[in-house]
Amino acid sequence: MATFAELVAAKFDLMLIDVPIGLIDGPRACDVEARALLGARRSSVFPAPSRRLLTTQRYAGQCSVQLWNILYKIREVDAGMTPRLQRRIREAHPECSFAQLNGGPLRFSKKTSEGLAERRALLRPLFGTTPAVPGTAVDDVLDAYALLWSATGPHAVLGNGERDVRGLHCEIVI
Image 1 (tube, rainbow, N blue to C red):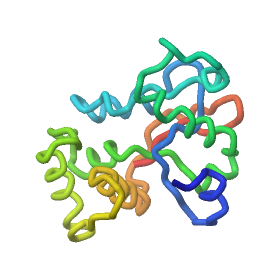
Image 2 (cartoon, helix red, strand yellow):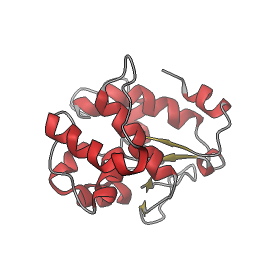
Image 3 (cartoon, rainbow, N blue to C red):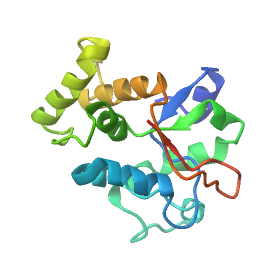
């Protein structure tokens, strides 16, 4: 897996990453809007941590298992992100992209055969058959294609214009 510094060095015009950018104390409006967009699938968007949590040495009881599993990546992105970089490296969420493509929330979890079929059906008219990528879970490949579609837009931006104390936008690109 590439480090954030390696992604920044790649000099792409636009990168969408499924990692929170712009951390505040309390709920971010973009996360609240994303959960509303996803309806029954809202649990796939968990609250972004506060920057204070990134510096805490003890996390027990302070965050979900899902957040715990990516906290190191959020810390890495937060340490390297600047308002200038955020012009080309933006936060996105695949489930929001799929909901936008579908015109509403999806019915099935991406971890089920029905959920994978639902996502493939949405992507097929845009990209044809999505290939298998050795060593990568099928749902991760489909998520990447959903973000590729979002990069052709953006088709929507969730958030109310709030910024964190470092001037980073708290928003999710769809």
